[in-house]
Image 1 (cartoon, rainbow, N blue to C red):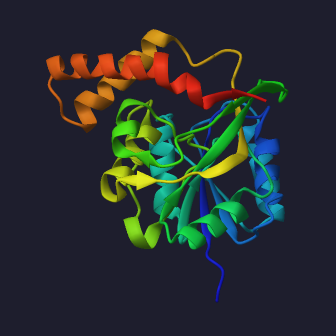
Image 2 (cartoon, helix red, strand yellow):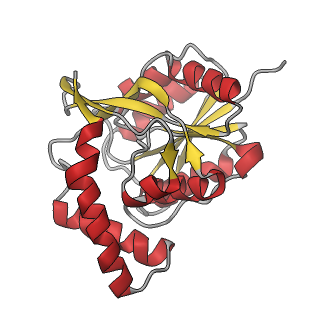
Length: 256
């Protein structure tokens, strides 16, 4: 049977410090049939020239450049339009995959006859040093659980195109991944993660999750715009979100 092609969606913006490691983590995959579609969002540093060197030496890597700075959502959506894979996976330009990531996930999907999965991931700092923190998720993630907390790390998600089609990426500046996973879980109701860490999420010094207030604003916007709840209903739902963040989610953040 012919191997499935995995399309990897990577937006980039001023990522010269990290993009080499990110691309190399894809090249180091034990599963070799992939295409990496990088869409640069008008970087002003050396990001593009660095990527171009990889493109010259690896035909599986493709680079596109937006005409104006538009945000990661637009970059991901553009990359999606260029993707031809049987599966869609996501990797931001400062995050890393462990070498076995794609192989493990494709095997997991086949064994469980599933169309979507994700995995746990470890956190590193801007310099690439481990923070001794692993982010896990419920082993049988329901739509309701996801409704109150995004347990799926963007760098770990992978879905089957023949089952879902190409799922449009939200153009909002933040929380596009959560909206994507909610769209998927709305259809399949539950999803199982590969129960091990397959990636490294980089926490940047200048954005340690931005601010808590901004996070609340973006989550509120998801309830209002994606779910279509009224202003008042969204406020009440945010109470459930805050409860999950304070009381439930910490159970899935482990020291390693």
